[in-house]
Amino acid sequence: MNQANYLTFEGEAKLQAELQELKGPKREELSQRLRSAIQMGDLSENADYHKAKEDQGFLEGRIQELEAILRNATIIQENSNKDTVFVGSHVTIQEGQEDIETYHLVGPTEADPRKGRISYESPIGRALMDKKVGDIAEAETPGGTIKFKVLKIE
Image (tube, rainbow, N blue to C red; front, side, top):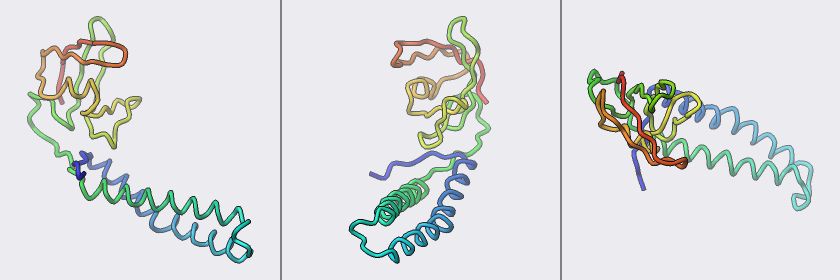
């Protein structure tokens, strides 16, 4: 399935850098490890060889994953419309009398809740989509239903 991956410009650059690192220095390092292990002889009992082959499988899998993400990436454009929440918005919310929180709505690939980056596919992200300042959003979370007010959209 070719689902679009929403990425910020920074997220795309980060994934491109990782891909180049894996395809260049990391692949070369692994290749040298394999050559060294092969030169030791008897591959059936060579733990270094088996570990290097396993690492090679993970490396090639990650390269394929990154290429697929980047191939299907939709870059989040800065939008001057600050009236409605969309992917890429910075949204300030408040749940009842709790502390005010600000989230950056991003695609699942870049989500990092500890850094205030939540996926538009998450319960809170879905609840925020298409809301306007002053709207009350309701999200079903693992901890139960929460309601919060949209205070600001940037």
